[in-house]
Length: 601
Ligand SMILES: Nc1nc2c(ncn2[C@@H]2O[C@H](COP(=O)(O)OP(=O)(O)OP(=O)(O)O)[C@@H](O)[C@H]2O)c(=O)[nH]1
Image (cartoon, rainbow, N blue to C red; front, top):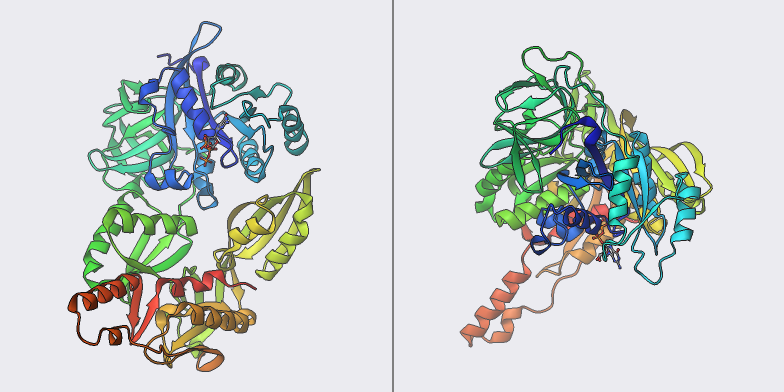
């Protein structure tokens, strides 16, 4: 295969969900003979089960295909698949930084949608050449002309020459590859200069240690080279380099402009960070590539095994998962209510859900998760600052000078009709309006400063439902700001339950406390006795509800007679208890801990 810069193209495919990105990628692999038709497993690029089920990509992928164009020349095309969720905006930006162009897929029956706009903006910000592609033209309802107009008016991308294609029939896929070769610029770089390579993903492989996906920006890299990761300072010998087709094939070297994988031989993924620059340990460069940022957990939750015997297995599972995930951090946590568990940090709610699901599915654990919270900075009267990852750690109010919470700069893109809806939502979430710009007649960009704690409630879901799915959200950290925050305690049968307490803005405490008591009343099943539920701040009760006592005992029906029937009933009860935790003498289901996430204003 060619290594000449002029014969390399690095690109990614971007689209709104379900517009056909994966199907199209599969067709490309097929048409270039990379994967034989009989080996095609639909949507080869989304490898992890959970990703496949949810239709989201969490990790980046890079597949190299060889394409002989109509000009008779053979080109090396590297197709880079980027993660598709707001939790992973930084990872997306690094994957795009490894590309020179992007194919923007738009469904011919749906037209431009929210994520089309959001992804196109990301690609433009990354200075990528954009090739519009109108997909699903096999469908009778396809309206390519209307969609072309939408792309031009809404995104200001010329669409006269948009590729018309069908991932289903394969029509237009050849045109797409020709467009990639002719419209996307070849990479630039200096093959003679010292090595500079961008890491745009890294993962732990049980057999080979940490593997990185890289783009060589200058120079070249081969087996046996002694390299240094510039941000972490880690040095190592290159064990192997190569490309995915999509199975890994070792190459003698990766040359300037090329994308491929690198086996580092290192055991810890935190030594090989996304966004870092690789250079040679001896005679390397001094200036890293721009854009490196530390992956920082933003959301914290307590994870507790339902069965205390699973504490050690949970610890081992977390150790295994963090080998592959530098953003995953954790430390032991003890709760009076839930026993021994861990406080775990995540990039965002999706990251949290995925990890919890993997712990349960891949490691067979039954877990209870407490409501997510953020990292607060509590300044004590003596001047000392304490970082708080859990509401339980909140010091005595008398000793606190003030509390600061993390804010985000949030960018929301919407059609003009939804400006009012977004205003209502963001103001209700303590957002400060910054500016609003018309990017085109069909797209408004609103900038807000919003406390992260408000965003991790159901903000994203609410934003989507209030704008019929049109809004897209992108955010970055904006530092800490002082806030009037208090710890709200929830009491069951008069006893404060540490795992249910949370931190809330003073002005929201009463509403949230009341709504939460109502919710908990619905969620907590009737017990043999009455269960009063109270929300309180430092002993002052704000709201109260009561779960009434159950009338009958199930076993009473058995008259002590039929033993098998009795056992069956008990088993049924046991199954029903799944995800319940006895707190004192009250059975509390998992939902109760998440109720705070669903508070309606
Ligand atoms: N008729 C028709 N259906 C298509 C075409 N391309 C994709 N589809 C269907 O559209 C649906 C979504 O396609 P995917 O390839 O999974 O779309 P995607 O954009 O990768 O979706 P996500 O990964 O979930 O974002 C699937 O049911 C496909 O079978 C096409 O060209 N024509």
